[in-house]
Image (cartoon, rainbow, N blue to C red; front, side, top):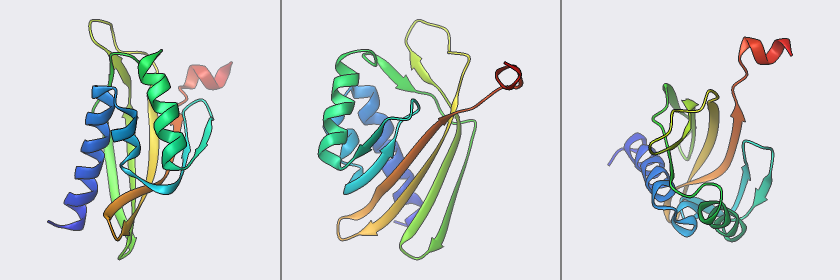
Length: 135
């Protein structure tokens, strides 16, 4: 499997874990010492803390949600063992409800580890619209 396919498979595992509401599986796509910044600016460090925080969300306000396909994405490899994946225009969807007006851009850094490709950092930022910037 190519490195590009492996990183995209890792993203697919993450998206599937979200849809399943499985915090442990979601966190398993990250290194033990990963840094994670949520869309609300929450800073989470490490796989164990990430699993707990995500599961709390999946059991609560994120119950029954899934992620949309990104409007666009880019994947590049600045070094042989580092990948940067940018997904733009992602929304958190809830079945039976209209898509929310806001989407976000996520930047994931993946590292080639002894366990294969794993994300080591994640930054999620809500995309501002022109009307957001005027207020």
